[in-house]
Length: 200
Image (tube, rainbow, N blue to C red; front, side):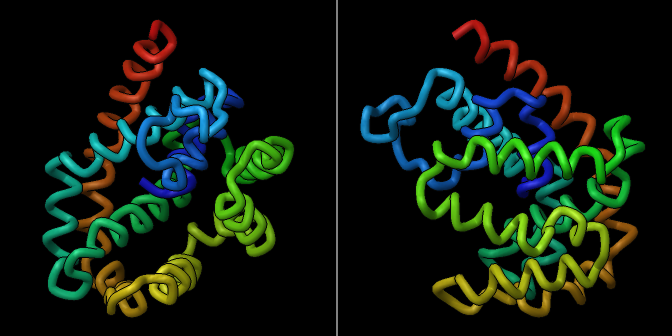
């Protein structure tokens, strides 16, 4: 999953939010002293990884990856993550009971307050996230297109992400249906994972 989903699934817990946001920048054992993470932040990194593992193995995600593979090849999973954030943003109040503007204000404010704990690459990403208001942009296909083009510029190999918006438009209803099946199962899994992490 992408930034919005990871942020929401942190359940407004500062440690989980930090770990979930910086998860892709933490390599190896998150408890290693070089990372300088608190126990709650370590739990957040582990939650981030569990979200990604569950997502990658889910049949609805696999079905969308297959749709996108002819264009995006090994980057199809990246496109799925961004597309699913689109459907989460579009239906945020219905799916979470909270308005997207209210959550976005909390999310940006909390991340900026916590940013002294971030590795430098994560801090740079946060600056762009807030400056260009990525979360609000996720509601529109134009915003998703901009996000995908930005990711495409940073990939080491041709990714197909720069034109992947065409597949979102082409398969919109199919992808939406897969997301609708997937989301409640992810939420339930994350709730159980948070309970397990709190006991660790």
